[in-house]
Image (cartoon, rainbow, N blue to C red):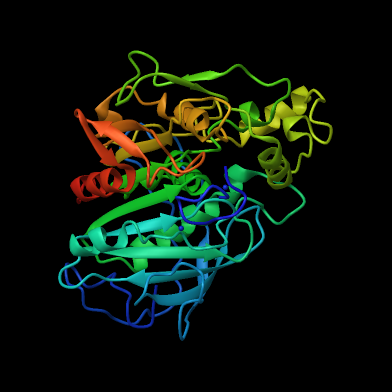
Length: 390
């Protein structure tokens, strides 16, 4: 996990307006003015979806004269500010931007950046391809750490209501009605999308999800506990959907990351802090597990019959380089054993030659015997699978 959100290809990293609301525009790229904030309803699940947690509300939506400068928003985007409210969390501000393609909108791709999500995800490796293929794009940035509830009691899983609520709002109120609804998350942003699917019922509407370098909160207990758990084999022989060879990675958060995770979980013992060698308690381990995406209970859903899913994780050939996003991610991907769980399309793709420990974009991946640049492979997968399934 990265502690700041920057371009995918960088090492130091942890989801639209007055005339662009397209909720009632069918397949047209024409626009209309939002009538006001809408309260998202808790989406239902069609099959084997457990009981989704309640979503919150989006309010105070207001257009901005321009998108924040120096914050990665694509040229031509229209930006808006809003407030997201969720149960058991403090209200949080957000800025989001929407950019429509020329002509008919085939679908919308919602991007969530890594780290605390306080800087919009840089989409320069994807914008041209997605726009040319007919996809609108949404970028966003929070005013505070989305993973921190902002209250005395911390719970990353409950804080994940925020991106889940915003994503639902975008697809209910901004995206073109009848077009595909898709998401792409990086590092902690991939965890935001995974929480939305597993905890908040996003499988009831999301058509495609591309998860880059994560999800990094699949098992927070294994990330935080000390002594550290054993190395995890990513893509072991026979793992469903894996396109690469086995490699090992540690699910444990690195010391700097553990410090940040300790803050957002309200437990500074994460990683054995402050000494780095203090055994964590059974109570801490239990609390971290409970707020993980894969928390061992019946509530998370790992069945999204109408949502195609692809994961992209770094394999730089050594377990000494990396911040556990591959191992953490694989804990989530191990939950999938058939294509029926993921819209008939599921893949886990190890990427070599990453830029640092999470930079899948400039890396390379071998698919069907052909070596492809990471960002190209991800773009191709999105364009092939971001189709209407609901």
